[in-house]
Image 1 (tube, rainbow, N blue to C red):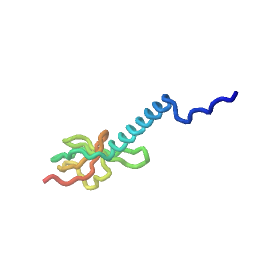
Image 2: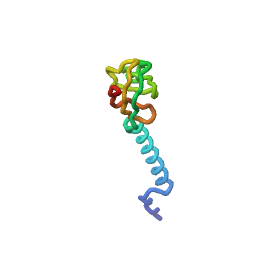
Image 3: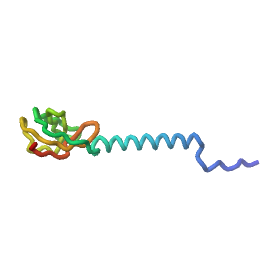
Image 4: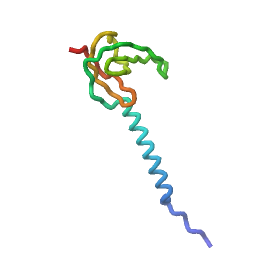
Length: 105
């Protein structure tokens, strides 16, 4: 007697596991994109009270701007000075970053 060939379709359990893993990967990718690229509402009339230089994970310098509107990270902040007031366009969900800045009018 010969045995029948195995069913080439994945089992129900296999499809469920594949679906769950796909969902986890998609959520992780969405969080990765959201933390860096999602535009946020801008803030205006923020006075910079402190500038802190931190070492990044990749050996680069990260600048934290402490302002009257909150604390924001930026690589775009050349020219921002303590005591001055600025308008910021922000992006990122977990650690808001300064996408653009202009002196407050």
